[in-house]
Image (cartoon, rainbow, N blue to C red):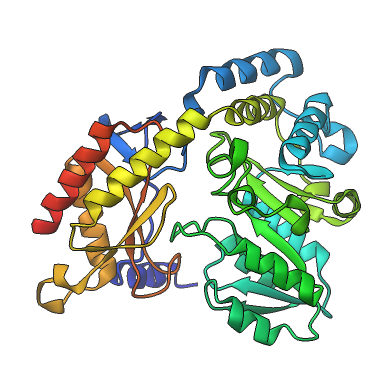
Length: 390
């Protein structure tokens, strides 16, 4: 294949991706090539990745269980500590049963590819995460996409159709929420299964951090399938699928990425378990995060950038044509330029371009954390104003 040609085309379009040279990430800061930056690109929404409780738990588990699970969960990999995490997750979220996965991508692939047949239809919000879209494309079911949060359009297409409706709790690139009152009503009326991907809502929203459904007053039992991750607000990594005991038993038998993968390492599971316990009492961190969100939105409203209607830790800033000299440069190139200028001033911000977001909607994806201070947010806003003027 002409790899170099493909890469050159991506380079010319401002779409080529490169791995950043990160030395380490420490709380609200990261170090790259010896220089320290304020980190506004990660998903550590509550600042738990550096919590002493998680570090202590991981260290103790490594000494007791070792550093690896040594096999798939159905052989000898599923240990007491895995069972404990599943039990406490299910109790916290009001679910019958839970199973663990190495990542949200793996969990979504396992569920969608395993659950549906060619007789089914999978209905996906147009802005669903890439892991959901790819799983739908690989599933034997027919995939249909509906306009973002457009439940009226979805309802008109659901008549006499059996399958699965999938949406996100908090959308990873726009920061807004799915309409879960409307989705749960629609699923019940049409007898479709309903699945939530709450990767970016878990731990941050709702009572005791239970997520988007709790935030919107929707009972866990109104949604058939729950997916959540441990790499955002919980500060670790990995994911879970939750639902009825029958669903989990079915996946134990048929989800190939679960059956044929080595299980999560015990130190990782111990850190997740500590995070689950810690996050339930972290109202102070959630309140601090909300204060930082409101501070940022108040300041960003005065910038020549389009601030999307998000009240979550994900704050996207879209680029307006007024920032492009003579209209000759595309959004993608300008996004990269703005991110580079911010790094020159000591701020690490994500530059998001197609195909992660639709063409013409390149953006700076700014993510906030309870670990950020008021001074951090004020400094970022000053830097944004400066680079926009330049």
